[in-house]
Image 1 (tube, rainbow, N blue to C red):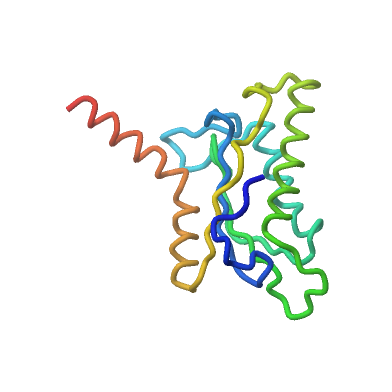
Image 2: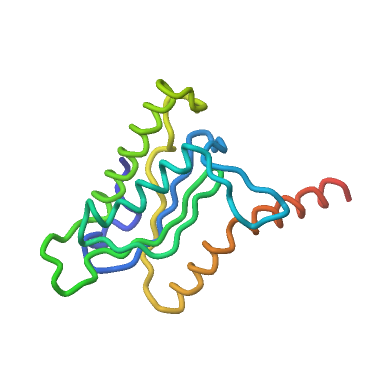
Length: 167
């Protein structure tokens, strides 16, 4: 897995991080959306991703989860690391993301083999992930709003693209 973006940042320091992971070849295997609702209807693959994300605090007691969204071809989430004063087992973002991508990829490949889930070329995710260190409360609020609005924004972008192609 590729190293995080900021080589000088201590990714095990208490902090909040935005993480984004994109499916292999940007294939929409995690869910689907419709213009009538701003929600994503998850596939079995998307449900697996959701279960693994929600399982992070059990695997890593130093992890707390904030807002997140499973989109058809990517995932956004805010993870808080080592934020409690009694954190006896600090963890790095790299370790958390490695576990998450490994568990979801393994589950996905098992589903492809055993339950005929759609294959996206042998991999669930693109290599690496995007991370952003969240440095202020105002930035945290803005990122939360972005994540929560992401499904609805998908249809707004599609509508703008169609209008631009037509006119």
